[in-house]
Image 1 (cartoon, rainbow, N blue to C red):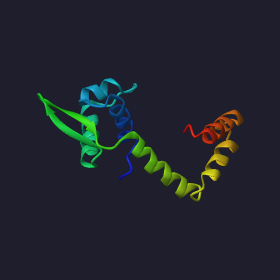
Image 2 (image 1 turned 135 degrees about the vertical axis):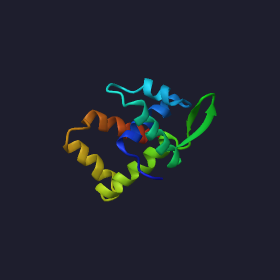
Image 3 (image 1 turned 45 degrees about the vertical axis):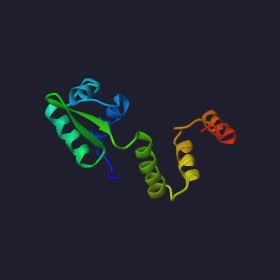
Length: 120
C-alpha cells in the first residue's frame, strides 16, 4: 500500500466518511479553505491510480468508492510509524506521548482497562 500525501489523506478521510461520492460531494465536505475543483479532481484521479478508489460512471460524472478501508490504511501506516520511529515498540510510543503530555494518566488507565477487558 502506497503512502498518501497530506492532500490525498484529506480527500480520503472525506470519501471514507461519505462511502460513495462524486468530486463535488468531496469538495462540499472540505473545511475552508477548500481546494479548487480541478486540484481536487487531480487528487481523486491520483487516488484512483494508487488503487485507493474505484470510479464508476454516474451520469456525466463518476462516483467514487473506497477500495481500501480507513482501518486498513491506519493499520498499515501506524505500524510503519511504530517500526520506524519507536523501534517496533508500542511501549516506546506510549512513553513518548506520555512524556510530551499528549496522553494523560487517566487516559492511560482507561486504555489499560479496555485492554484488560478485551474491549478494544
